[in-house]
Length: 359
Image 1 (cartoon, rainbow, N blue to C red):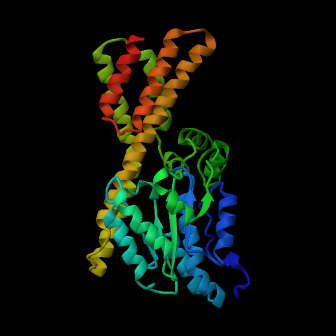
Image 2: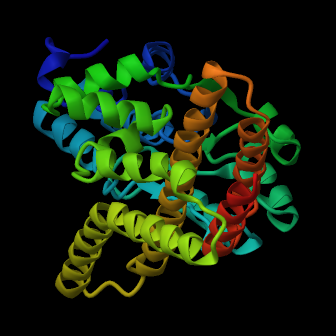
Image 3: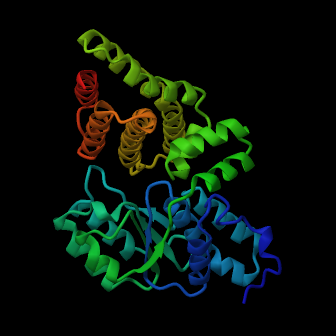
């Protein structure tokens, strides 16, 4: 039983987890007597990352809470929620896959004693990206974990590659966030109503993207640009080139807030390196993580634009039967499927816009 009479005086571990009451309630209950591994399942932006931080905050502050030490418990939670607690370790791929090298790093981290307390939390985002050379190593350490470690794994879904790992973990599902819930959360955070509505609609269930879009002054203009494409393609290569250039310029502008965040993160890390002189600063890991975030943003922007164009053609079909609109929707669907395969961005857009101009 906690010796802190009013736990509300402590930082709320779930303050930034929106619309996931069932998941946070399950993690809340698990924190008092955790098992060795949990798997948080949900799409990007559903809250799994912030949920992992919140769970870590509870786990790493538990001893201080039990001892009635408010100051220490507050410190542990704040550090964990900022992903900077010394006993909170992130193991992330330095490339497109989680390789043997990262699995070996995970084992080393699990095998060393906690720095400050009796427990260490190891978080593995995107565990579904694990490759064949790493599966056996990760599975072994999860099957025979040190008593001091709690693993928090994150995945969009249980793929065939991680079935055995998932079977050794407690699943906690994070459902997609509805547009209405996101709009309400953005408005409550101080975003003007119209902007909150547009950002929530464009975020497609991704709360992190919704927060980013809420700071994007050009979102409405970007949506209008994509919406104008069906009416502007005229069969000429000149117009296709112009539209591709305009769309990519708009996507570059949409990336600027994220670039600013990344620059700030690197400044903080570089200042820490200068202050402490640490060689193993994690700069390479951070840069790789930022590259993945940029890639995700551009994929999200493409999907947003393709969905916007699709609505334009669907509006035509509502008015009347239109074989050209049906064929155009099929071409957009094909382009949307191609986005998953990491295509060359300008070539994808050029090919699509040329196809649309011929239909």
